[in-house]
Every structure is written in C-alpha cells, then in structure tokens.
Length: 335
Image (cartoon, rainbow, N blue to C red):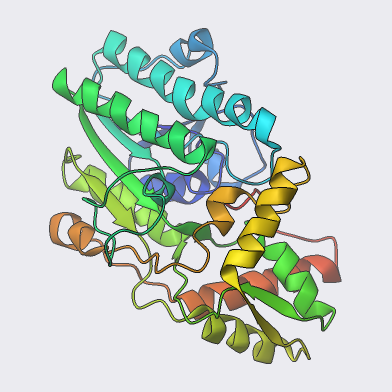
C-alpha cells in the first residue's frame, strides 16, 4: 500500500514515515521543503505547497492511497492580532480543503488528519472527552475546527477520516515556547506561573503521535475523533519544580493572580506586542486534561511517555544545542 504524508517533512511526519517504512510500506512525503533525514533513502519526496491546489494535485494521488494530513501553521512564532487569520487559514483550512478535493478527484477515501485540542476552548467538563463542547478562543483553533467541519461533510460523501486532537506536542527538534522557560531556568530567574500552579499540564510525545496515526491506519481509519495526551499529568508546580531541580538552577516558582496576568496579556495583545497567544494564556490555569481512553478502546493506542520525562528531555536538547553546533534535528515550532 502507498502512504502519502502531506507535511511529512514536519515534526510528526518525520517520525511517522520511518515507522511505515519499517512496516514494509511504500511512503511518499509531500512537503514544501526537504531536510536531510536518513529515512529519505527509503521514501519518495514530492515538493508540495498545500495552499496551492495545483501543487496538491501534482502529487498524483491514487484511489488506494492512505493519506495523512500533518501540514499546519502553529502558534509559534506568535502573530499579532491582525495577521492571525491570514497566517493560519491558508495552510490549516484551505490546505486541508485542497487535499480532500484532490483525494475526491483521485477516488482516494482514507485520511488521517491532525487538528488540536484548542478547538475546545475553556474547560467546561472534566476530564475533557471528545464530546466536550467546541468553542475555540482564537484563529488557530478556529482554523482547525473548520477543518473538522469540512471533514464531517466529506464523511457524508463516503470518506473515512480519523481526526486527532493533540495537546502540546513535544519531542526531539521541537522547543518553541519552551525555550523561553528554559532560558529563565538557565539564568536562575524566577519562573512565573499563571495562577497557583496546582492545575495539571499535559503534553503528548511526538513518538506517541506518530504511533497514533499508524494505529488509525491499522484499525481501518475509523470515522472518529481522538484526543491525544499523556496519562496522569502532574501539577504545573511539580512539573516545573522537578525540571528546576534537574537543571541545578536557583530559579524559584512564582505563583501569580491568574486573572491579573491574563488581563495584562490581553492589553499587550491589544497593543500588538503579544508575548503569548490568547489561546495559550487564557486556559493556562484551567484543568485542561484530555481523556485519551477512546483511542485505547478503539485503536489499541496507549501513550508511552510521561510529562516529566518529556520536559526534561526537551531541556537536555536545549542544553545540547547551546553547547555546540552539532544538532541532529532541525528545530520546528511548538504549538
């Protein structure tokens, strides 16, 4: 079987592609740029800009292809308010639209598509299952929610589409907003928390994300949505405290009044000098924990990586990057 991965040179794709090759599958990576990755010896690369329908059509999809859409614009680098729609929608929504249209024309009917947990917005019920109300807080979340609505329409036309809603994805080559945290710890500066830090914070490993996409294919691409997150995420205070101790830093954790910090960040955003995206800080002190049991029940997928280990591994990579120029993985933004 041929597997076509749009955005396959990106963060999740570069871990999914070698998994499929190891299964003995034929793999095509379609992306706007190509990096020097070892698995390219065993896959076909096709240059593709998903914002251009002609470029997507030129990939040459076939009726029996298994298709994955991993192409996306993320929340890093931070955009000013006026630019957010035009930053997110061309790739996240219109890119998805072009892919499903090309699939339809080719007669391809199976798609694994990544969206985000940020379609949920503020926490209404806890833990957050896939039936949680949907109310995105910004253009990124809306661009992803619109792709879910698009996929719902194509399901009615006979496509099988598995949707994945991950928490913050971290792993080798992805620092993004975490780099700001790591710098504070390296400089022994106070680390402010939005709120008390008693609420949990949940990551998901890039390795677990790649395995989820593979599991959906193996399960026959169910017409379902699945949350992706770690198991038993610790409180923010413990997560950051453990990292500070691991780093041997003198940093202290600084609880803050969540409402006051959010209004300050709102003001900075209004003045077009954002230091965080509203979709990040507005839920920072909420109990945003995804229930991932549906993926286990239906796909046999269980996350293998702990939040504490993922954060320490990311910090270790940050330190290695600072220590010398030899870095194995090109860095791509974190959500």
